[in-house]
Length: 261
Ligand code: ADE
Image (cartoon, rainbow, N blue to C red; front, side, top):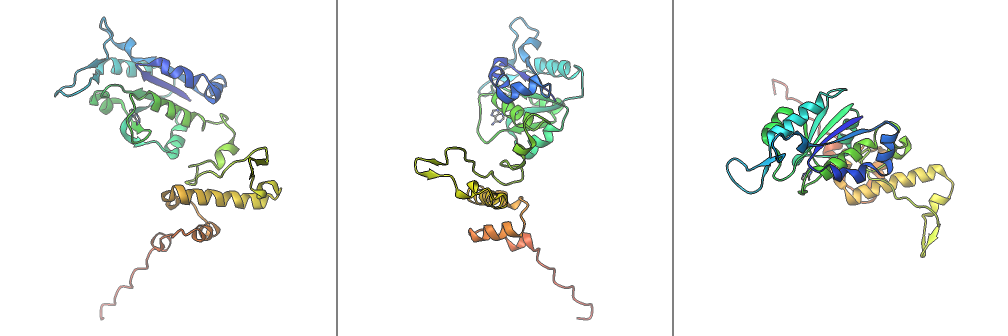
């Protein structure tokens, strides 16, 4: 996948892209990341990229011209047309499902705003999707763009093992089960005995129940979209979960009365 990032602060990407899994994904040719400085597209002497807002008010707004020039120049570079994303606190909140959808696109372009944001007409003309990484305001879109790149890149084929992706949090609306490694006893805290029993059937049941219990206790709203079988439901009910009869068994409609009645 090719990812183009448009930013006023290119150096912010140096660390995240040059460590660990993202570094390896690029070395293996699975992620092709290009970080572009919007300022180089500003044609005036001072490379001005911001201006005062029409209508007054605090802060500055990122100008149209440098951004439009950057988007047009970069999207005409080789390859598939880019899916253009603007990072903004008023966008749709990023979820694992959105990361999965994005991981199937051949090319992304991430626009990082700063100051009060970008001129609305850039959003109208070029942007396909607006994403937020949560209900709080950052100093700019850069950290959010890095979060998107990280969440998407790890889903690309071969970047991490398919097994690691299978039962992780949010992959199927359930949180992940707890993990343990050596030593078996640490500060009087033993590893749950089932994990040392060698009984893979029992371990699978224990892990499933841990996922269900964690989700019920921490994020109960996720259970409404999780795929639950009879055993899952029975286990959750034993914890006090109340699965609404309405969602499980839609109420039967009253039989229409016969004309003569
Ligand atoms: N820019 C500033 N805050 C942001 C957020 N929460 N998500 C995405 N982009 C942002």
